[in-house]
Image (cartoon, rainbow, N blue to C red):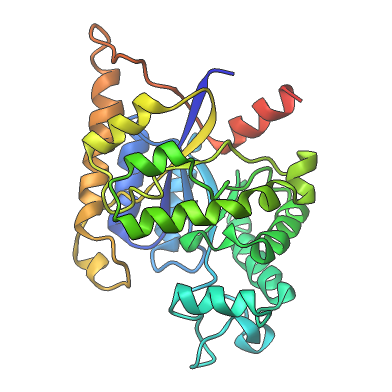
Length: 300
């Protein structure tokens, strides 16, 4: 199979500036997909953009940490932090609670379904699911999410594992690279989950750019694209505008959102306008997750 790439922006619905960047990039041919936060402050604006740009694949960016749940707090007690109203703010605390069995699969499924349902009730046909901060890298999180995705008719899920060659190109700190490499031991368990093994919910060969989060400039992006082998891959990115709305939310990604937006435009929009000087090697074919599901089904 030739190289195909899903260009997915996370955090759709977090701020108006992020939404505007996603809309502009898709219009420029530099983005094919975005995952929408059902509990995001700019949710209504994101829904408006999704309806206005029907070729943009829309997934659900399921939030289980660092945010406010949609479910009544008393119905998902094992997902809550000390205030008993919001999720655990720390990813480390969430992972620890999952690993020692303090997080209920039923609570994960209930909140995931609430977030998916809110988007679907707005008339959006979801192409896939992923999770804020890649929490479904843990099998105890991925299992109930896949059950909910299948019941909700969602055809695909992010493969939260980055290949070694992409980790090496990500320019992240050595500790971050070691963490991502060490977590790869969980990938066989993820791929063995029933929905993925059977193809009822499809996934990609892997996700690129996780290690480059916060460092994804034009040079790093081009290096990743040049090294990409055949198969179906996702590039995860976080473009946006570093504006006052972004100052009002909790995120470590601020100035880098402008850098990622510019990098995507340089790599894809400008190249598409310069047909007389195509890149060497050529860019992969750009698709979204619905395309990926159809291609996977056709090749089974």
